[in-house]
Image (cartoon, rainbow over all chains, first blue to last red; front, side, top):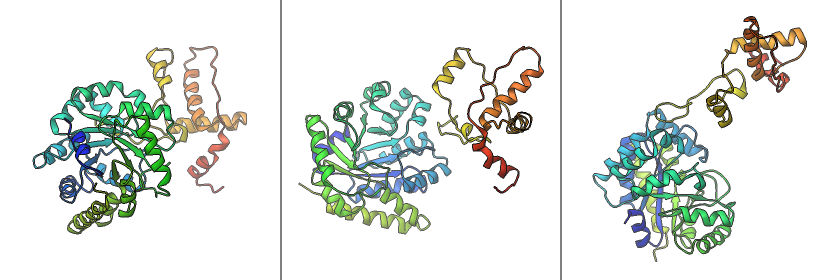
Length: 266
Length: 107
């Protein structure tokens, strides 16, 4: 069984965090990942830096720029995962990014390397599920999950298809916008999630990301979803404190703790 | 246009409409079919063509189209073709600001 399926089976509300690989540098990314787990994170989405991150807001864009300045490539991202796996064989890792670097490496090579290095799933932001069958074949061969996004404007028919294509979990984008935007209200999200559950016959866990910044928001959303995803708030802490790494690690750890303690436990 | 790791490369062109690191699928198809031959001209050649048409004909071409004009002038010199047809798409009045700032003129 894939580690992703495992974590959703055992956790009432799965706590997912995002960071850009190589922001502010590769060694810090590794440290942050271990610290995330120590402080309660259940699943890590590791961002593959890409020059044209169309779904990301300014905070994550700047994080990606810092990583690209360090010349972090897709291969470096995969190598970081295997480094992480030297000490942690339990926490699922999902690579999140855009199609071009993966297309460039080739689906077959990417999928087998990802498996070899200890990756559990892949989320390609700019790959519509309708176009995903050829990469999905390679991922499936290697028992890697493929996660897709659904948004407030996704129509029911397509939602059903997306739930079908997805494995591991489904990432519901809480708002019409980019990463780092602010959430406005919970009600429509709650309604939408119960719709998704119905359309997918409860076959796939539904997580919520984009706009979750506070323990309060995390708690509310954890009451009606299978997991919450936090990205921009962490990348923001990296940006703010990257000149003083000790402080940066501390701030990230305490922020993660505060979110973790707010989540619904049973 | 990408580097060896699949990162998109930055581009430069004097014309905003060409300052873009991709090629549409239809163009790729036409090139592979050999139905269209694709060539390039420099910023300077395009600018020269821009001034030429503006001054001689009173028609301000778009900077994108100026590239086509510049190549047509080269082609005409070879005297291999009796008639050359140029599609003068777009309009150059949108590019006046670009030209002005190149000439350090305030508009």
